[in-house]
Image (cartoon, rainbow, N blue to C red; front, side, top):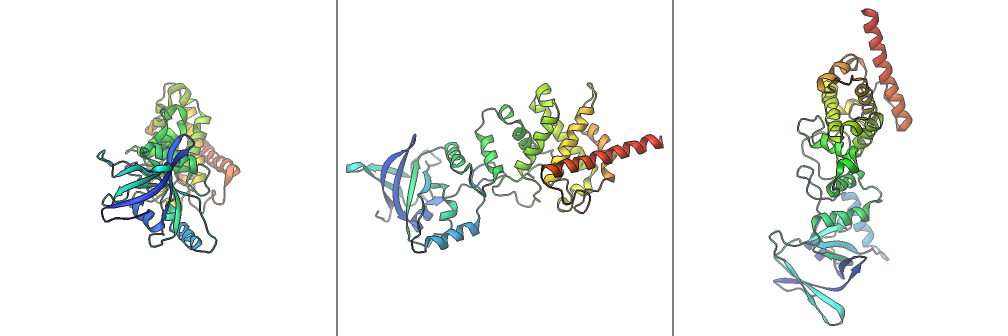
Length: 347
């Protein structure tokens, strides 16, 4: 490997990784760091696919890789095309099957870190030689597919982030994963109380208080879908509108509690699951001709929800797991039943 003022040269071997052509080589960690970047998901724009950077994870690898006897599997990159269609790199064939990758020194960071952002993140000043494998010219969608496959079972990787990848790659998300379709609708719809509030695992939207994760909401919506026939009879789009109407009504009826998510269970796992079960109850009670909109849900929630203690020190405290959800929804149903009995007796 040699370096010139105007260009950077990487000596590689050309080969195949299953069905995709790749380049294999070795280079200094500092050089690979200078040439590469992590395409972290920007939750505002929806661009990118990597998880947010974990500095401790990266520093742990930095300490390890400098020890005697350390090693690592190849760092994985994709050599991207230029945004204007021009290539800031070229590949020159060499005798014997080798290639030289010639990179314009002014091109900046052209290697997307498909699988190595934490290994490489804190190695900018180290000249330790590391192996690398590089795809050539994958699209951002293809990069996402490769990343998801490599990391699909990775410990600690946000399942919400992988679910978001699935959404980006699905041709018909409503049919393939209706719970994910509805959860993303809640996150992306400006009129939703969950607008930009579901954590995907990428760079968070600044200034907003995180509540539940995308994965939590998916599991909750799945409970709603299994408890009703809305999606089957009326379609997933209608089901999404009904779920939105429920949460909009809830955030209105319980405005004070909704505004203090850390002190109440409304937006925490156990609460989200139980409330989606409650939404299924209320949805099933509607007459065939009745519109299940925000006004409908607000009227029913207004009869009892404000009198229930949703706080972190209330009856839902300490509940967890599947049995905890069952206990939580039973407590909520009992509170509603008592409220209805009071209305009858007072009447």
